[in-house]
Amino acid sequence: MEETKKCKECSEVKTLNEFYKCNSCNKGVMTICSDCYKQKYKNKNSIPGRTRAHSDKEEAERLLTAMGYELYNDDNPIHKQFLRRIENKYKGFY
Image 1 (spheres, rainbow, N blue to C red):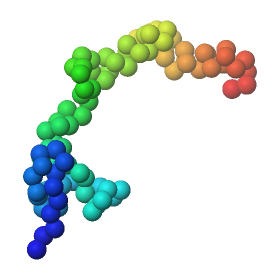
Image 2 (image 1 turned 90 degrees about the vertical axis):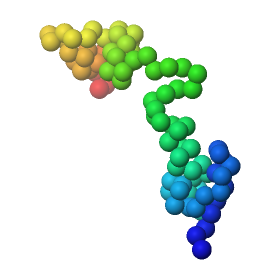
Image 3 (image 1 turned 60 degrees about the vertical axis):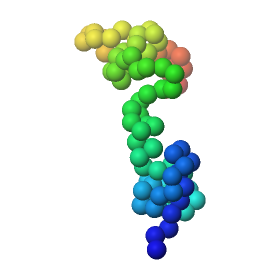
Image 4 (image 1 turned 180 degrees about the vertical axis):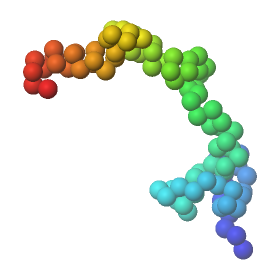
């Protein structure tokens, strides 16, 4: 007979093969079934209470601009701007 477990999300008793594996969890499976997990986390980038307004690239561009980096300048690429900041901050200790 297959071992069963109750899902903490939907409260249904299901077989262990209906739960995702988890090495650090009791019985080696997660506390919620795979169906509930998929439903709960179907958009892994979602943040509760907030819709995702930007793609990852747009978010990176926004952060770099907010930090004062000049984007899309072939004569002054971001990695050189970063190295210059490190050099200025540590005055040759880098």
